[in-house]
Length: 195
Image 1 (cartoon, one colour):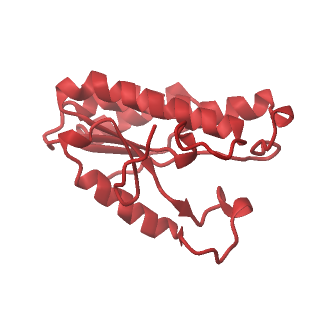
Image 2 (tube, one colour; image 1 turned 30 degrees about the vertical axis):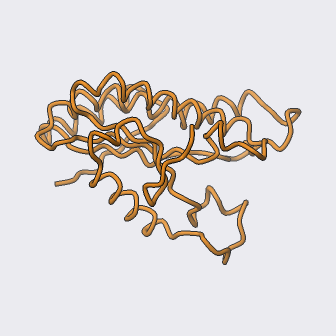
Image 3 (tube, rainbow, N blue to C red; image 1 turned 180 degrees about the horizontal axis):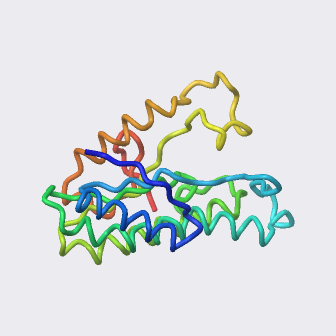
């Protein structure tokens, strides 16, 4: 089965309460998929130049895009390692722009660095949890027609996925994951992305 639980990624107490609620209701989990992220919000905009960098922007991006997924792992991985599903999966939405090797355009300092931080966290988690049989994945959803990408794409641009289509492709990647995929950074079609 599946279950939705309210959870504030900026609050460890909220994440801990969500994990406790899931454990109480379901006993455990087989797959955890963090599908959150922030690029802009209110006065926070992606930086085109260093002079646009702000503490507010860096903190928001790191809190949601790096610390939130790390705290989800802290509180949900203990249930995953007890899963009967082989392999259990912890996956998180990251972004191709979080690839250091693929960065040829620059800009978006806060978002890029926070997503790169999340990728490093997930890779490190994959190494620690490998002995428990857990598969940890960094997943890039493609360009998706959501509020996150709206200011940066044309409404009818080719190659833009609906949220539903992107989700279907990512679920397929997660459900078909094997131990060999642990610690990988993949796109929606399970093509490897360089770190």
